[in-house]
Length: 234
Image (cartoon, rainbow, N blue to C red; front, side):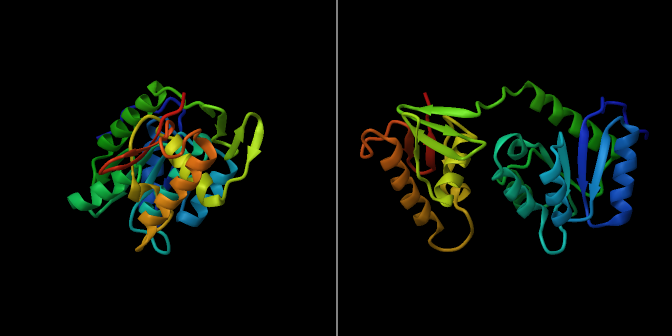
């Protein structure tokens, strides 16, 4: 079945280590009206994403050296528009646990292989429409006497810079991307392994000392019991 013409010039990045499938997906999406750039793996995709933004990424999960899950996690940690780029995962791994993992890392959709070409095009169109309707996040958040610039990763108090560690910047960015929404502690951890949750708690405590007027009764960086933490800007 021919793919519907719905692209309207949106720029997509297709990442897949299978040359044949990558070429097929590119031709399918090009016929549907999209502008398509391709990458044979995560390394190539990172380099492209450092050069320009795209409207959506079609991403294979099972790739050598770095999986689509890992690239999605890296992408969601990036500042500004890049970190909010929609992602649809394509994979032969269709188990519920795999889908849950992909979505929990920030993917917008998950399509098991083999898939119908028309379904892929329609899912991409639906994601792009949702992204267009989503209000843009403010680039600077007000936190009482403090202000946080998401793009620069800079915290100021009454216009004076507040020193942050790299881990604190990353944690604050992840919370700032979902203001007024609880974020699980495991999604705030910078890596995997024992002690990561405890490291998040320590970073939150340090951030509260820098942001809150009363760190023991936080107004902006709140604990959500049984879940994690939430940033509640003005």
